[in-house]
Image 1 (cartoon, rainbow, N blue to C red):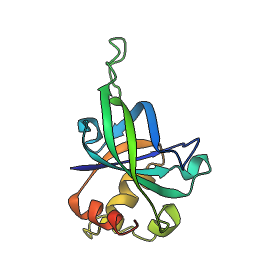
Image 2 (image 1 turned 180 degrees about the horizontal axis):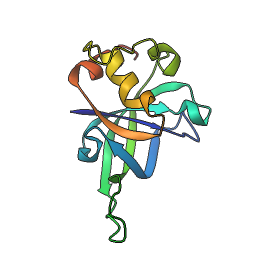
Image 3 (image 1 turned 180 degrees about the vertical axis):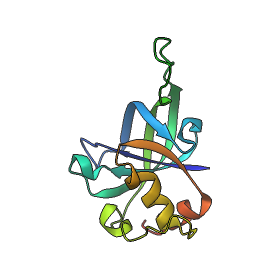
Length: 136
């Protein structure tokens, strides 16, 4: 399984990224060292969507707080960039894919990242990973 993260990036051109205690959804909590991850600069924070593909070089689950009954799993990861996006894909390019049951990789990404606009780590299908590979 491949993964994608949407987050604020201080330096979208960096060769290494660190993300502390990030929210996970759609299987994102299963991310592990060696996994492929696509890095999106969050448009909520002034970013422009997909910026990099990378390899997870470390992954650590944030312990659950015993005083909270419900909480979203969180993970801290470090990522080494392996490629820089050559074409743009983000909210504007994906927003027209709204038929949640059409099976398209564009729709999967729109649903997982932009239906609920919070920054997060998500698991993505092989089809969505292959679609994103086309932007490098």
